Image 1: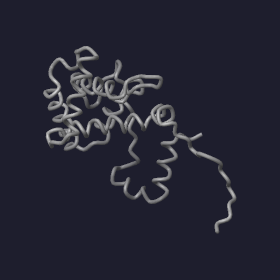
Image 2: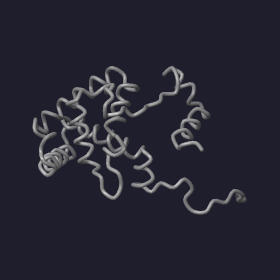
Image 3: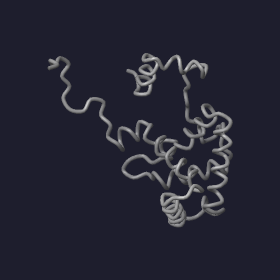
Image 4: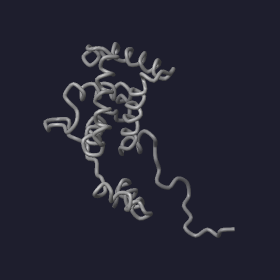
Length: 174
């Protein structure tokens, strides 16, 4: 049986997406980097620690898997190393450096309560406005989109159902 991603990929190709994807060389496939023993393709160790801490605070493990359980940092690493162009990569590195400064040197190693408070204050300031927080808003969007693109995020958190309600294959169109 095909996965949801394989079905969507097939649909994109079948409705003309193939002509757009040929510019990329082939259908791009983003595979999450293993954040364990294997070397990452994009993030430095400090950047990975920052992204992992922010991801864990934004989407913690509850009765459903959290961002770290589904390897959101590894997915973002794969996305940036395999998909993003050099301008996007440089912008993302600058964003993480700026966020590191905004959050402080001890953010990654701080207690969960202190880190959560710091991130909550940044989040409040970021969504009250100000272009200096655009990078944080962008990263938060990437983290949440990456999480909900996973099987656990879609099925367990959002309770996605392929065919909600009753399916009737033969209905008269009036």
